[in-house]
Image (cartoon, rainbow, N blue to C red; front, side, top):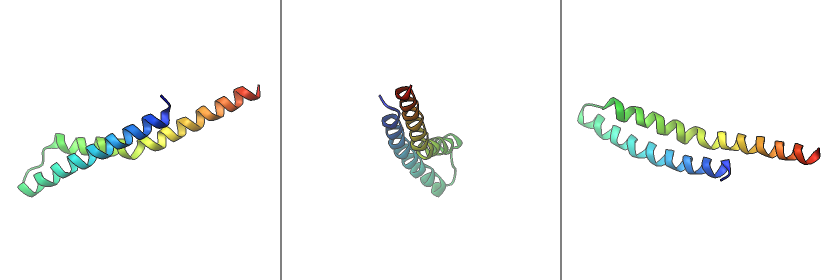
Length: 73
């Protein structure tokens, strides 16, 4: 499977997890106490959501340049 497909897949997993755990943290804040593990999951899924596509795009560009260079030789 190509890196861009993995990037899009992880992008959507990160988006859903970030939204889900973000809602849970907001509900916990409204009730008084926030679980630090759930807050950490918000940050993990947020980073996954934010960085998955740019990393996949860079990997695709590197693969494309390597294939182009190999064809030229």
